[in-house]
Length: 603
Image 1 (cartoon, helix red, strand yellow):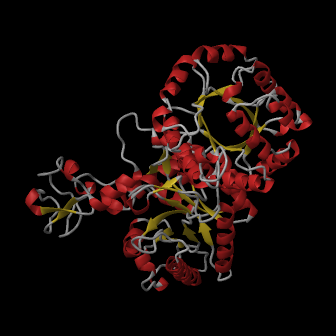
Image 2 (tube, one colour):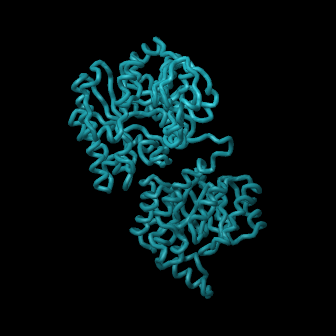
Image 3 (tube, one colour):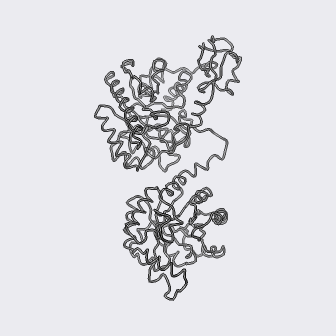
């Protein structure tokens, strides 16, 4: 984890209200912590100091002074906002001014100019909290001697160039490599750069701490504003910090991610029958055409089967799949019985429901609807009365926009609500027909202002639809989603903090265990513990295995080994469990057959 620290410094201009606003903005941007500076005014400057620089600095320090009482009140506010709070001291007397309140700080900082202040640094280390130490202004031999004088190991050195600002050509980031190789300890970077993006390079080189001043206005009067970053820039730094490990991943054989596989399917090509082909007939190039989408055998795969005999009839326009040449696995009776007893379902589309119901007599199905289908006529009367049903809302409302009922784009919000209402009406019609609940699962992923408002808005909306007799269940989401052929980082219903909001709002959910396991590879949580913490609110389940952050929809037992405990955890829940293995519906549901046959052997 890379710790991003927003230095309040003296950018509060001596105003507690402004300091409070900076802390709130820093917390909103997602930083790990904020930091103050403090100097005892009686001890800061010698009375005879007459240098021009001394005069400017002493005036600024006095103008921007905040008392220890004020600083402690601000530290309490930072803690209320769930971020860490630290402070830089310049002398041991500075520390003494805080008396019994010193334990309120989560970390301390020794500024560059005090690197050799052995008494100050060891006094801070004695409190048992982390101490960050800037190395600016000093030569290598001074740094070495300083390190040897520390009486505790609980410190991290920060490379720092003490210019204000630091130009691009003077950051000397190569020193980070030197620190890593010479001392073999965690290290960080204290930034006064004119360009905040320099910090991204420092992170990529292994800096585990980034410290930089925060301001609302880089052009404001004051010494530090010009070398500070705005809350928006901090938000971008935090985003990169959270993704840095994954950003730098891939040092090994290449594996396409889920988004690439979707694009390969949608944009790639596979072979289709150009004419009717009978079982036993040899399949040659002239009997096929190569067209999009790639839902069957592609070029490299088909090369193994040219001039082989077909095992089944193919009609003109039908995709050539593996089962044309290799006998299809049969759905076992044991698997059918297990599925019925455990409410195992498979996803279906409206157009293939009859075929899938016949091939999979398991009695439970989830309709995955497109926005076009929802906006057309939905007739519940054509579906059997003895099945369990659920419905998955479309992720999209058109070819360019996501489902977002609270979008600032009024048309997007209106269309989203229309699709929601039409889906709820369809679910209600199915409920009337079957006499059973038909939950609606939705991927609600767009956070506008903050996560608190996100949950308040969605909880209220879901309550309104519940009054119509239909349950809308937000599904647990992955760290990233494959929207519109790209990868999009999601900020809701996928982290530890979401558990608190879900419990607070008593919000029933669909637990997608595949998404949850993908999140476990990124976020600091345990998938089984997450399931147990919201167990009473899990009213629907999606199941598949996963690997890493983007290995989605794998067959059971083919993902990360620890995932099996999480899958077992949701299997015991008495609700529908929808198999969501990747492309399970292709080749007449061959993937679903494999998954259904495997479940009773595993559980």
